[in-house]
Each structure stands twice: as C-alpha cells, then as structure tokens.
Image 1 (tube, rainbow, N blue to C red):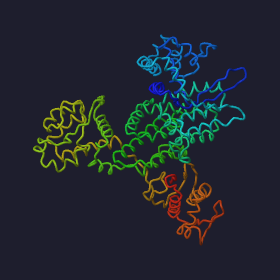
Image 2: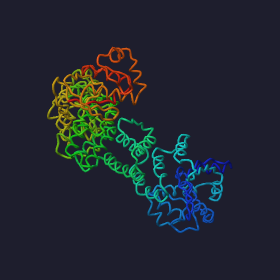
Image 3: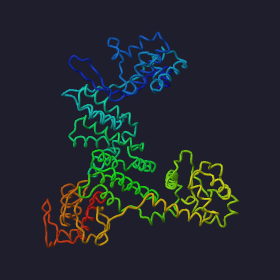
Image 4: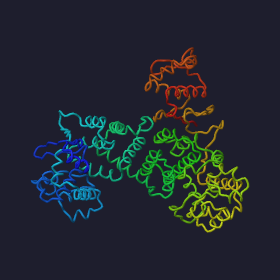
Length: 622
C-alpha cells in the first residue's frame, strides 16, 4: 500500500483503494453505528498508516485525528474503528498514542505493521504532509446496507458481492448470516462469546475446512456437500435444524474444540491420541467427520470409551493398509458419510464400521505381497512413520525421532565398493533399494553416505534405534536375500501393529453385516433387516420389502431416474411386464414381487447403477 501511495504522489492520479461494505443501525436515542461486513482489514491498514504519518510530523496531529477519533465521545468510544477482539487493545493503543501499551503489545501483528509504516515514512523522499495529502486521491466505494422492514435481505447482498468477486470467504458469509438475524447488542454478545473463540481456534482455510467436515458429519450422505459450497450447505443445515443463532454457534464451538484436539492429537485418551497422530501423519482428515460424531457420542455417554478406542484403532488399521498398498481412497468420502449416520440399536457402532469397511479392508495376504516389492520410500513421510511405528513396537524406550532420517542400507547410488562386495548387485538394486527391508532410521545419515555394509554395520551397532541396531546382529552380508528376509520380518510386525479384524461368518460363508449394494455376494439364506439409501435408514424384514422400499424411494425422490430404469429393455421385460404376482408402487406402476433373494439383489443393484446411487445404498443382512 505504501508503494501505491508514493506512486500517487508521483503521478498525481487517483487510485482505486477498494470496496467497503457495512450495515447501518439506526435506533431511537442511540448514536448511529456502522458494522463492517467487508473491508475491515483495508480500513485498519489505512488508519495505521495515518497513525504513522502523525507520529512522523506532530503538526499533522489535528488533521490525522479527524480520521482516527471521535473527539466528543468518551475514551472507550473515541476510536472510530473498533478492531476485531484479538487486536483491539493494540489498535487502540496505537491510535491513542499510548507508548507504554504499544510496547507491551510488541508481539501484535498490528504493532509490527505500524512500526513498518513508521520506518517507511521516515525513509520516504516525500514528507508526511505530502503523503497525507495523497491519501485524498484514494477512491473508495462505500456500500451501505440499512436494516429495516423495507430493506433488501442483507444475505442476498452478501451473496451477490461474493459472486461478483469481492473476497468474502465462506466463514465470513456464515458469520454474517448468523449475526444479521439478531440485534446489535446480541450480535456483540454472540461475536465476542462464540465467533471470536472460533476464529482463535482456526486460521484462514482451516476454519472453512472445519465447517465443511462438520456439515458432512451433520448432513450425512443424503446431502453430499462440496467444500466449495460450504456456505449454502450451512444455510440448508441451519434452516433444517430450526435453531436460533446462539444454538448454532454453541454447536459449532463444541465441535470446533473436538476438531482442534484431533488436529493436535490431544484428547483425554492416550490410545486415541496415538491413533490420531497416525491418521494426521497419513494426511487422512477425510475421516474427521466420523471422528467428530464418535467423540460426541462418547461425551454424551452413548458410546463406551472401550468401544471408542476399538473403533478408532480399527479405522486406523484400515487407513494404514490402504496407504501402504497405494489404493485409491476415492470412495472413502461416501463410506464416511454413511458412518456418520447413527446406527440402529441392534447393529452398534463397531459392527456397523466393520461391515462398511470390510469390502475394502486390505487382507494380510495382499498387504504382505505389496510390501515385498513396493517403493515405500516414494512417500517418504509414510515410510518414516512406518519405521517409527516399528521402532516403538520393538523398543520400550521413548525415542525422539525429530532429527532422525531414513537410511538406505544398500545406498540409492551404488559405489564401486558395493559392486565389488555384493554379487550381481545391479540386477536387484532398482527393485529392492526403496523397499521396506532396505530402510531404517538413523541420526547420522550423511556420515555413512554410500559406505559399504561392513562400515555401516559398525555404526549401526552403536545406534540407540533398535530396528537399526538389530541389523548387524541379524545379517552378516547385505544382498537381495537379506532385504527380502528383513522385509518379511518387518511386515509380520506391521500385521501385529495393524491387525485385520475378525468377522463373524454364517450360513453360506457370506458374513452377516452391512454391504454396499454393488458388492458381489450370494444372499441366499440371508434376511435383510435394514436398507440405508442416501443416509436414510429403513427397517425391513424381507427381500420383498427391501425391493419395494428402494423402488418407492426412487419413484418419490428421483422420478426421472426411475423412468430411465423403467424403460430399460431388459428390466422392463423381466420386472414390469407379464407379471405373475404384481404389486403396485406408490405411483401406481406394477412390479413383479415373486423373485428370489439374489434376483431382487441383482435388480436393485442394476437400478441403483442407472440412478447413480451405487455408492449411497447399504443394506444389513443377518
């Protein structure tokens, strides 16, 4: 901004400074107040600059104070602009020239910016008076919104501003949406007691991300929401809840504390914290909505701490196996949305999680086969996490891994010593160099560099990291066989750290529990007890009820998709014509009901595919 001001002096041309949006309150026997909606930072910066000009030339004090102070009001109300709560004391100290208080607020970003302006003014080739005069060349667009019975809804104005390029974030819009529904006094109360606390917990994009994940938890799969549509999603959610703004902010703040505890891996349970640390280091925040729901159920005593630990540990095992096998997590959003729906009492949280995750839970065999040759070093953060977990599994000592680095036993770049010491090393180097068995942790990586194995063994023996110290005692030479053997050994330990859960198996070998509709299984001899469609649960007791519950849902909620399925040649011939035992749908159409369990399952699977619902339909069988 200061460079722009000096350019104005040089060019003597006007300069567009930006847009200021505010709401005016006109109440009986009360002075007019303007609440900033957009442009607070812009005005704050401008006033800091004016303070710096005043500081440079005391003869400008009266002129500058006209912009900064209401001279006729009491001390607490003299400063024209009320900064946000966290910066208010620093800002008032600067504007009112209270040197001692400015010094005490030396860590404030506002104080730092003010001092920067003072320095720039002192170094400028232009006088403070010239720079102050140049401020009059700034063009500012003021948009004033007046609240009253005939006023346009401010939310419409805010949304219009946002769509035309003004930088109102989703959280700005949500704040405005909630606070504009109450009067000025209540606004101040809600802002200071709720919104300021939320802002202190989050910074920038993190705040929007929290609300996005909060909405996924709250709205479930019936209302899929994109991060780019957080504001409108929150509007829909707020209206559906029939809350007032204080109730909404109370709920947001409660879950915000949970969320921050997750980010910091700091709940009141050490075992949960350990799982959270792994989840965070794997960058798997996709599961946060589910974790928020679980935490809330624990607080409300609807979920025991023992089950909570078991559920989160199983989820962590699932995620780690997916990551190691480099499998796509594209379908995980849908699974998490469905997990956020409270389970039926007969199912329980843990059983429902097992059945929803089971179809993609990496088996011990696949996990083992993957680690034999996979380049785990490609994702170095995951590789280091894996090695740290292996060390923690072996050792009782607490190790600080902050300065530990990944060490390749067989180096990434082969030296002549390695080629002479290891027969045909070039033939297996590329295949095994970045596999788990060839990696360890060390705090003196540069010291060893590409040293031959004999020299490395001597260094490894002195290591305080057990997985490194064990190498010289377990291996005299280092070749393809050694690497494969160590990979198998470490893989077995990982299977113990991240065990595969136990599933109950009945009847035809198909496990009882919850399945996604497109999972290929034989349901003969099974009884359906629940179907979940886009996050909505329906209790059922037969396959016929399963069929008609789904089809009636489709007719009611997706009629165009129903018609496409209705007109499919194969489906029409088998299920809608020449009926032996017809039954009417809610729209009057008749559908065949004399079908086997597998036939019904196949029909619903096909129709779900046509309706783009395959990833949003789950059913539970016994």
